[in-house]
Image (tube, rainbow, N blue to C red; front, side):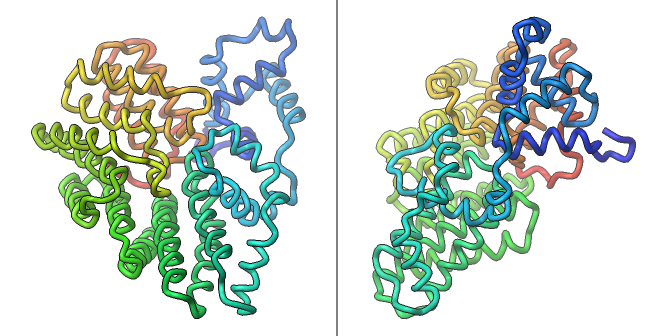
Length: 442
């Protein structure tokens, strides 16, 4: 890092090239290993050490020496960036990709997203797109396939945000919402108007989240209002409940306000939508655990588990993320904060069953950070640092504020430790953590 706190051009270049390829630092380390010949590979350190070097390079702390400079050159040459045409039309590409992913009836892993991204623009169905164009231009009223097209696209955006940084998806999502607005301005049958109002609400929730990630308070408030208005007109309490849940992360560490928002969301939800109910109850458990309200935290997480057992987390776009591994991480957050060691170990065992190479990067930002805290509290500093480094890798790739906040907690908790691994991680973290990020959400 230069004296004025700005990354050198070569450091920014390495990071930019990695991010444009949608790689984590772990994946870049793997590519560096692949680019090395047998003799050179024998000279390389362990994967974790290579990742640490990449972090230092991207932070501008260490400039790559001859060996790493040559390996970077080979990696970039073997793995070209997306074409200039694709970079010039990011919104169009992401609109097509969102529609493609949204039509699938299952979650998609990162490898599938990358494969679909290569063909989504060319493979997007022409008929729904042409119907949408004609509908917006006023040539005819939107028909059911047109409405289904924007419904699928909304689902896709919610799925993609687990894999692609919100900053990249945000412009395309705004285009999507503008198109939905144009459709709503026409004369519509009541059922189609309600479906489009639901689409607007589901999209506005995500737009508010992206705006918050970018630190744009004005647009966060505007999209929050849109989500609530859409919920009212669609008579869909789940949309308002979800928006309240998202807002519970945005209150700058005010636990009382966060808890109030979650309770309001549960009231709006009623007895329906078990997946959203399970998520909000788990959020309530997380926040009340931090408030020291052990009784409410434990009863809430147990009630959340009961609701989750009968839930379909694919029922609404915003609960796609809540697979068994992510839900287990929320239980771990509660039990770790309450210092319940046996329950924490059981939660980590459950998480381990569901984590793997295809786990969504955004999920790793939070899950691995929570595992780091739990491992440290259980006395395993080495494993805590390993988890923290995985979280740092994912958070750097996604630029996710919630990941940085969780890692701030990890770095703070590791501060009293005099072990070498803890000191090394805190040094790496200080070199990698963006200096001008928004305030912590929790």
